[in-house]
Image (tube, one colour):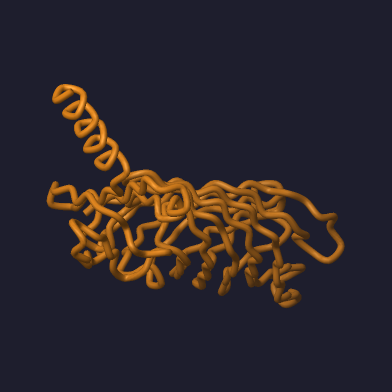
Amino acid sequence: MKRYLGFVLLLGTLSLQAQNDRLFLNNGNVLRGVIANDSLSDTIRIAISQVIVSVPFEAINEIYPNRRHNQDLLYQRSGPLRTMSTNLTFGIVSGKSSSYAPSVMRPAGYISQFYHAHKLLNIGVQTGIVDYKEYTIYPTSIEYQAHFGRSYRNWLVYGNTGYGFARATKDYEEQYSLSGGINYQLGLGYHLAQDRYAFQFKVGYSVQMIEETITYSDVNKTIRQRQLNKITIQITYRISYL
């Protein structure tokens, strides 16, 4: 009878431990209890032996909830706040290079460096290349991102502005010369992360200003201001580090 009672108590203890939510802290400690939050906020409240403990979000590396209705709290940090990240972006731009040209899809690539101060304050410097049939654009810009949600999966909005250098391709460089101009882009995306690595899928609308100069003679030339309006689709790979 005593053996049976001891076995039941052991199973009960293991069952209670198995039902605990767990917070894995940045310092290596693990807190086991029952998470009291219904959603992520600046702090996570966890009940440990009927005592509520509030833990700052920045001190948490991983949240592992046991209860099914708390699965939206499942979180693994994709890059702590106040860190840097390197981002490689590949995508396509779709639109017309001129009013008389057909709409085309062309490749684009970017590399950027970001500083992450807050989920709503991510600032980066970006440079890249966009290939058109008649010319190549080399945009350099400052980008801002805001993430909504504490999870490793969240929505984001972004915007950037800067200057794009322009150069005519080989087949067209004898017809006209180019000067660059300001550019800007607005869009939204979805962020998927694990540990220090993340993917972003973004859709946006971009505008690039350029100036064309067509020279007929030493005294006869035409200068045209052009605005390139494009739909952009991008995939970004991010590596975060301290």
